Image 1 (tube, rainbow, N blue to C red):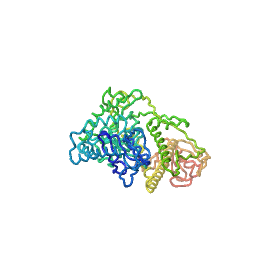
Image 2 (image 1 turned 30 degrees about the horizontal axis):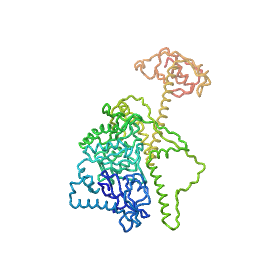
Image 3 (image 1 turned 45 degrees about the horizontal axis):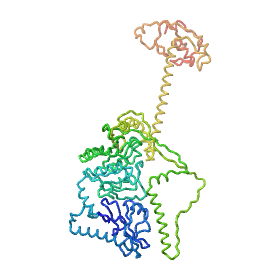
Image 4 (image 1 turned 135 degrees about the horizontal axis):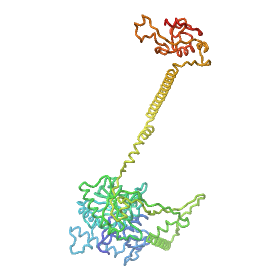
Length: 629
């Protein structure tokens, strides 16, 4: 029996299995003791992770009724298995190999005696002193209760060297209670995706002395599950560290990055977070570069934790730390801005005859292929053994699979996505990708809320009224109707105002033109042509009327009057008679007018403008009549 065994706190459906145990100081192996259906005893040693994976994919062991022991399935995968010596075939069902059982009982009795005494034998080697997993967890919790909790995850899977080296370094520091919850496989380009409507498998594992779980989900699933309180006893660590990522997450590449998404999820939950990436380059980087990257990250992590405890760490953003390709020759730290750099997506068509996914998967899972082959061989052997031992006829079915009917008229194509790095012409050294290429360790704050630039703010101000009207029209029909009614009234008012303004301008222009025309033609001797006559005298009668030259003679009575008397005015143009002006005196009423004025008057009217006496043309005014004026 291997020394230092630790009985399993069963991860199956019951914990009453006395024949299942962890083996080895590192608890990486599991021992299964049972019997096959043909009565043969069997003891199998498994690496713990392989056993749990196989159990989840097949079915749990079935407890034998009334025996308190386990019945093994017909077969197990043969990778990492070891058949113990001394195993003999026992015909009684459910019997256990006596040699191995006695060895197990001896170890269990020694453990029980140590627990009753309260102090295990000091002479015994520590590796040979058994202890339950409960006591280990209790002691670990007592030691780590006073230490700040740090959660570590990544995007490339729990076996990624960047995560392993980082966790081991944090545990060696001895300053933090390190917990790990990371994806089971590579999820480095999963972005901020979550798993819905599917069950996620969580498996405990050993990783550098930290409490670790591998999750069959994305990095966001890992962080969300860890912070929910369903997996760990705590729900809010002091810091969440995502990394070290296998490749850069600069610029717009962060939207694809699973490691940045994990840190972003922690920030959304109100927990400070860091995302760490190594600028890995093919044919240039080596696995040892992760160790150098860890040595650079540790001072930054310690500084971040100190700032968090002092309340100085920024609460509204996470810090994206990028490490150059050669960490040992870095040029120092540099605070940078997020750039717009991204790798160019390249879709390649793949031949339908050679679908790359199956071969690529099996090339990466060679051990799984071997296990499947051995599993098939053992299944056939077990079936043959049952046919030999049983007398009744039996039906054996191998290779179950219904052939599907081909669907006509459908075309299936295969494509494969690859990202190709491209050169950037931006020479700004403050951008993350440029500083990283120049050999600096870059620190880029990433906020959940977008920063609004001044030009974008100015452009958005022009859309304000449009946005308001759109919001009103989509949310309240009554407000929409009122808005359009008020708009219509405003437009009607503007139209009426413009019409009035046009009419005012038109009549003002016509009035000015008429005034200028009258002023220019006031002293002319012209008479409108015959075709322009309306209701006045004929043109020949107007011309036949004799004109006089005005000579004003005052009487004694009039000499005493003021010179500005209205008797000296032409009532048509309201201007005084001047010496030498050509005038006309009407017969019958003896009223005097300027000749141009009265001629225009007679063109439209046959009455005196003052007394309305009917006037006939062709009469001459005597001189004595003029003297009386």
